Image (cartoon, rainbow, N blue to C red; front, side):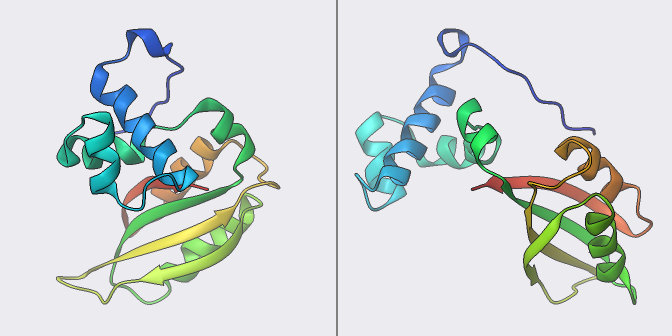
Amino acid sequence: MKERYYLVREDILPEAIVKTIQVKLLLASGDVKTVHEAVEQVGLSRSAFYKYKDGIHLVNQLERERIVNISIDLEHQSGMLSRVLGRVADYGGNVLTIQQSIPLQGRANVVISVEMSRLSEELGILLEGLETISGVKRVRLIGQG
């Protein structure tokens, strides 16, 4: 399924979504040290926070933050990571970090941090480009910062 993004006014969002943003702001500001403290302070369950946290971002954060973390599930084949990194470079992305799991049942997960200030296309186009690589099973944007 192709990810789509929407710009939605806060007053029409469900309470759990708004509280998820509040928790993220508390954590980012350092006013609380743990997720447990933050969710208690705003009155949100931890499970709701973890359900929504990776999909909720303030618009002004998205405009400022030019580093994204992308999770990619790959078939265990020689050269797969090289093809992924090459595609990121083709779009003008600069890979800052790579974390790769040991392949289990023929698949490995890779999380890459990509600096996007020189991307030649929008982020969504890059993600779609990664999905078209043979052997890539799933691509997800998991964070920005």
